[in-house]
View 1 (cartoon, helix red, strand yellow):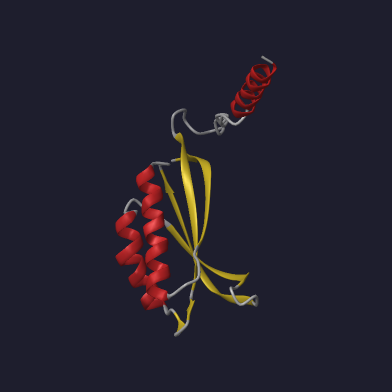
View 2: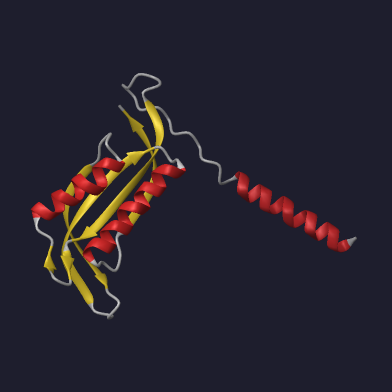
Length: 142
């Protein structure tokens, strides 16, 4: 009986903790009409521009965007230049030019799968160790 009581107490504690994880709707943004904002997923992908064979030039980067990224997210995305550093597999600090791509989309399974496809193709095509993906939930207003 004591074991059952402990189990029940544990389950109730877990349920209470999970209830605190529910997302709270964000307050409306002053000046925007009601109903113009929506909860969306924002994925920022950071692509290193160095390969074992040298740097990816702008023509090649634009080709990758046109062939791989844009067909998966034709509704729009944002690209900007960045400069990154990380500790590589060798243990050395690596520095390189990068490109950041931000994509706002619904948090559906297909959107996450398309992000994974982009990452896999970049790693395969340019023999990269990794592509950094930063995902977050955001209130998006148009």
